[in-house]
Image (cartoon, rainbow, N blue to C red; front, side):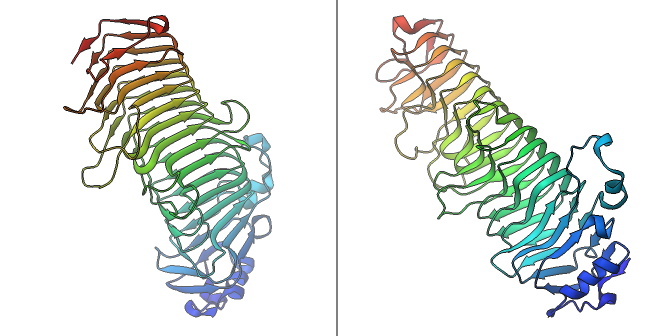
Length: 450
């Protein structure tokens, strides 16, 4: 074990320890030990693994911290792996010298506006465990070509940029689990211009990653206007924020390749809320949104645009009575194809944030099935179908708040829609009736006014 103090590092928070720690990296045995102390550095600790060999950095149970006073990453791990993760494509030199670089039990604090925590490029099996990164720009910055990344039990907190930033990265297999990723002004987990397969985001607390002065914010953002992200889960997380302009807790953005740039994802078993939109899909495909508790979506609980093959099932859409403010919580489907909504409970108690024409709006869509749901305290309309075809609304309970004079109808279908079936619903009566369906638009049968 290479104690950095034996290589001249002081750890007193005042002496520049950059040279001493670099010496320990170059001449040590690969197990870099930081005893209790504050280690000030003024430039990145650059670690080319092909030169220095297998590496572990340990901060003795979190008693050590690195203070980065310069621009760039405090730790910069560089590997040479540029192929996929098939065993046959991993060079012996990577297994011998570069696999599994591990950083654990250490704190990194930014002392410069452009200081980053850890940068990882071309590395096989990088593993971060029990790391605290705060007051940096980006917490963990992945780029280039990385494989089998594991970020576990870390605290990535109060950074001016992104907590975990996947930046024009080619990557297969990443797990972010058991982490606290909060107060990143440019996002909690952000993906831009990447080629990624197998992304697991599980069991994290991802909160308040927003900037009230920014044009838009998101706790989790997959921006695939360039590149693709497919195959993964967002499961068992607590994802909360504060209502901000154009903000979303989870946002997928596809590019010009219709419905195939971002998707094949399960968003399951999460608590998500307190943003303008809780889940926002743009040009996504193959996304399952099931078993979540969604609350306090100021404008939308779920907003899907130009998306296809979407399942929205058995979610609780409600509000938190301890939090003030509007809670519109509507579901909006616009220009979507092949969507199933089933078994959701959508209860409106708070007043809407601005004009709200419907609890569920289906606009310009094809092949939509809305079944077995409860829409309680509906807005002006419970379900509003506009310019859509092959739509089924069946076996639902849809009613307004008692005495709501603004309520128009439980279900309304416009004359531009076609092949709509409205069957076997409990439908509350509004000022214009309970079910408004032009004869040429479809059929209505077996509905009971409540």
